[in-house]
Length: 608
Image 1 (spheres, rainbow, N blue to C red):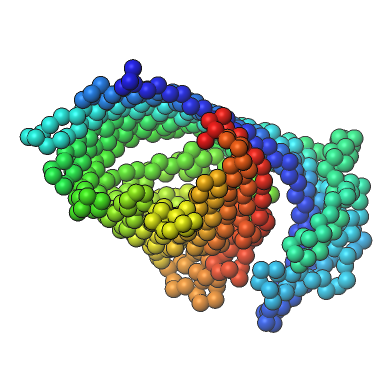
Image 2: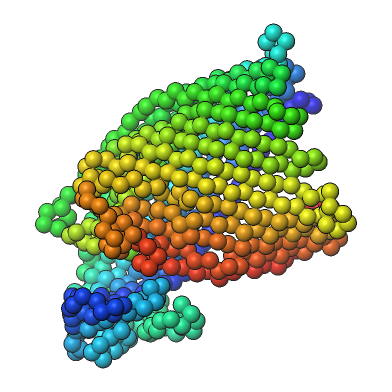
């Protein structure tokens, strides 16, 4: 049927990682005196730790989508059904062996801290102890992971649009419904073995791994272990290890959960054109039904007593109106204004009362669910001016403002005591209110009006500046009174791209930039003004993501019909990824991945 289209689409992706990580960790003792410039000195109660963990995650995504579209002259009918499934096996827990430095025959270690280069802080040893002697590191714990997480989604939707005339003005009425069901379950059953007698040293399981260019030669490191040898040693001497049931239950049971979310949605919308003016208004109805099962772990003086299931859930209905007005200033120039109300629901892991421990993260982290979370509600105001170039191109500029009720954002605090003492605990909370405002502009055009070879050039650029602020609950962090920006909201974001398409050759070059942004709230002001040294921008300030500027290039050359030579280079600037505390002089984590370069061939049967 010429007016009908049927389609089916699918996606399958699977990812496996075979990484290994070796970590030496200095633990300085007590600070002896105030720092002298960039030098700190500690007493001789310091010690070392070493751990080796292997990453073997199996992450898979599968989705299928089918549907149809029928244009019956004045009536348009659409429908679709989708199913998707994802699993993550071993993607959170890693096989980990920890070694503690006795020291048995050595005195305690006296460290200093040298921060002359804040991005490369060093811990020199002052009492001549060999901190990399493998005979002085002994296995303290051995973890065998068992982690599995799965999510299965079903979604169905249908809509009907009817074209009609309203007093000789073209109009369209639309209505539709959608149902989505998402089910996520997570199972964790780690085995944790302790070595109370500490009889097995790092020297018994040494491997041959080296990294001659580690951190651009800024740091030295000790000998590395071979995890195959670790497994063999532990399995051959399993009677010397004790199964730590307290740690197993305390770490694994709170991470188990089973959650389901079902959303029923429908909408009504009407669009009418009055000469140069087009008015579209409508309303969306959404009903959400959540339920979950999690675990409550009961301890007595640090010892596991029992694990009991906890069930909960909730449901709510939202009515979300919207209206949009478009005025055609000229045939190729439009002015748009819109207002709409929307919601953002909490993530499964944020709302289920679970606790997920990641001792291998830097710093070690515990993520806690918050069943009291409410969805964020936003009122959105937008103005956009756009001009279309002939034959191909568009220039846009606009302003946006959003008021937020119950904004969701992550906060981080340090656990003071217990099994996870000094771990960073992350939890999502609702703030009372917030807002975000900004401007945005975009220009995309094929410069075909240029002469000769230059008419193959094109440009694609966009820029946005935004500002935001949130408030905190009165009972949070003793009443934090400042108004920081929203998490992940970077003030300046821009992309600048150049294209060239001519005959057989096509290429793209792009520069992408994001300013630094808050990753998680950490600072506590106790109602007092920020201290200029240790306050908001000090070592106890909020946690930030580093600013990021990245260069990428890709191109292709058609050799013969559908055969192309393709090449690309990504992250040519070798840009840093990581986090810092308050200011960049207090780094938490800095990662460099080097550029990625690829050359290959692509063939398509269309002979394009």
